[in-house]
Each structure stands twice: as C-alpha cells, then as structure tokens.
Image 1 (tube, rainbow, N blue to C red):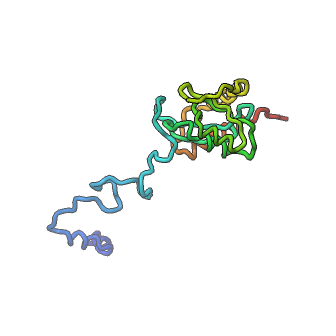
Image 2 (image 1 turned 45 degrees about the vertical axis):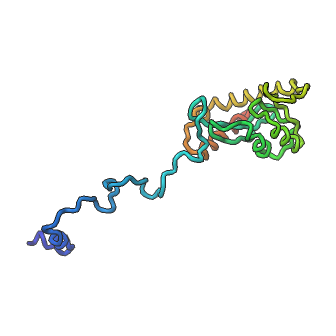
Image 3 (image 1 turned 135 degrees about the vertical axis):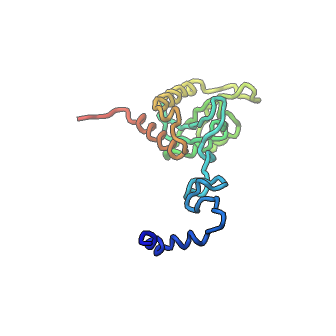
Length: 199
C-alpha cells in the first residue's frame, strides 16, 4: 500500500478502476496524432503548401523554371521575372519593360519567342524601338529589319551563360520561388562585379 499511495494521490488508481470491466480504448491519446485513422498535415502548418505559385512547370525539358531576363548593353542581368517552364515568352515582354532600374532604353532586343504585334506596340508606346525578328508564318512582315542591332543579342545569351555557371541557378536547388529569386539576384550581382580590388 505504501507504493500505491503516491499513485492514488495523483488519482492514477481511480482512473484505472473507473475503466475496470470495460474494453480498452483502441485509439491513441489526443497528443499523439501519428496513430489516428486519418491523414493529417504536420502539426502547426494548417495545410500543405505544395508547388502552386512556386514558378515551376512542365516543359519539353522537364520540370523547370524560366528566367525572363532584362540585360544591359554588356549582357549583364539587371532585372528578371520567374515563371513556370510551360509559360510562353511572348506574354512577359511588357513585364520586362516595366521592371528594373529607372532607365529609358532606346531599343528592346529580343528573340522570336517574344514576337507579337502586341509586344511591338507595347515597346513603341514606351518610346522603345522593338528589335524582334518576325516569325516565318507572320503576315505583313516589313521589308527592313535592324540586323546590326540584333547581333547584340549574343551578349545577352553570353550573360545567361555566365549566370548558369552558378550551379544553384542552373539546377534550381531551391523549392520556393522566393529563395530561387534571391539566389538568381545574388548570382547576377556577382556577375555585375567585374573587378575586385584588393590591397
């Protein structure tokens, strides 16, 4: 009885005697959610977040992210936008024209992916000359195209090549778009620093 008395003071014995003769409860106590019959999200999360809104999407290359970039004359990235891999290029030119530093470019050089009448009109409305080649199936193509200016697009491709030397950018090691955006920004900043002076 001496050994049972401390348990009785904590009302452990009474709770055992209360259920004497009855079937034992099958379910686990409330604090332990691992043994409940229904699946739950992690404690405290409220809901599973998933991949929605994380700039991920299926394309021919697999499950990827597109970096729509705005570069300067040297090909260094000064602004960018992230979309899923399946997103079309031509729908994001207006976004690229509006983001980034407050500068007024004279020309917008882009590849055929951005070719559309709406994009050319949007660039002209901002006082920017569009240097975008026409697709082969477009009607009413103008006879003149600024081929000399369009050769500068190679610098943009070289800038993206420098950006993809960073493994975390090329492979997208981050799940969330916010983290991946910060990694791309950091890599673009390192590409902008061309000379490091040391004492």
